[in-house]
Image (cartoon, rainbow, N blue to C red; front, side, top):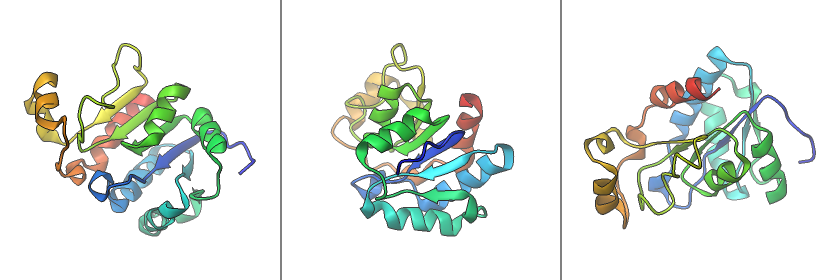
Length: 174
């Protein structure tokens, strides 16, 4: 995918494990909230195997024609370029978050807290452009308790994170 796209928000809905994937309906609702307030090009990126996720997101969105499905249509260097040029990256906790960290693109990570403290959250001092949102019960614990509780995995329901919660963060990052 050669074309440079400006004024974009990148959505990366894939993750290896299903329990680490935010629902396609939630992504669609979030995209619709973004379109209500902003005029962005929405780009859905991922591998060829993420095509079904992208298709479900588009199918569930009220703004189908305004979303570009680029899953499986971009090489890794193109993915990096698109993330680097985006106004915002929104992703599950997967490789895209690391690309956002590298590129300095404002990044929202939607996470169920799996292996908390290993890759996420990124240290705020060096990575102030990354915000990670976890299920609401994470607020009951301090960071050390979270590491102890979720360091070896989490089965918390990522879909307990509501699109409106993520949209509140979007508004602070744009």
